[in-house]
Length: 297
Image (cartoon, rainbow, N blue to C red; front, side, top):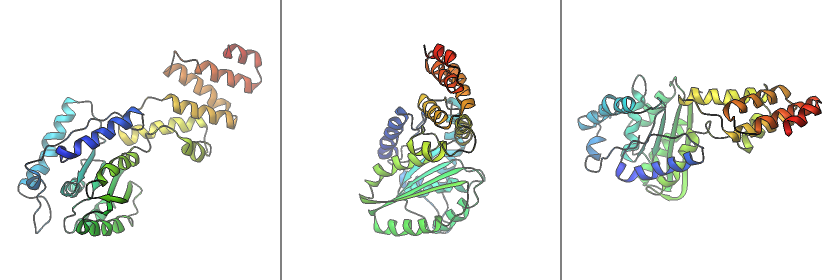
């Protein structure tokens, strides 16, 4: 969900398209809200309670009562929702955290114009979240000074939160201003939010796959089970991850996993030769060279 669609939609949607193309993130439904003429009213909050009021309260309810139900009724959408805002919009997205059941699982606050008491309220709320959630916030060295000071102070507070369900990331960019930081913050935020979804890379292979206490095949199954649990949808096993697990099986002489991996490949990629190749590796390591040669051929 993107506020300020007149200038924020294209950067966000473009990053989604690019990263989804390389399978670093899933395909996403990007919804933008045009607020070119109503921005100040939409993000209005009371100067006493500092919560949405008047037109701001109407806009707040519109999101949960009308827009999200419409999307869910007309599209195949999971309940893993991301909302992004800049400036006043970045402050406003925080209010959705204060519902009994927050509407979103990931929040991207780019140079937020924080309302009074927001940093304290954020700290209290984020500390008691019961569902896996992501919160990203960014400022820069040339950000608007009045906003930057409050953001830095807010970051100091949020860093003290000890909640295993919260995944918090903060960036303080150099050589960026209030507007250019948006182009740098969006890909960084997506990278954090979908870190679990990404294909196995060299770092994950060395630090997690090879050191996993269970079998290499079990690691692969757990990774994809966690993806489904975190994001609310099933990810099809990709060839990159299969090759990484096969390499781990070979390195650790994990014959049982190699055999299971061969069967998985045959099921998921019936036209691929990888299934026969991995089964050949399995027989070769078992010492049955005749069967290994048959599979290799």
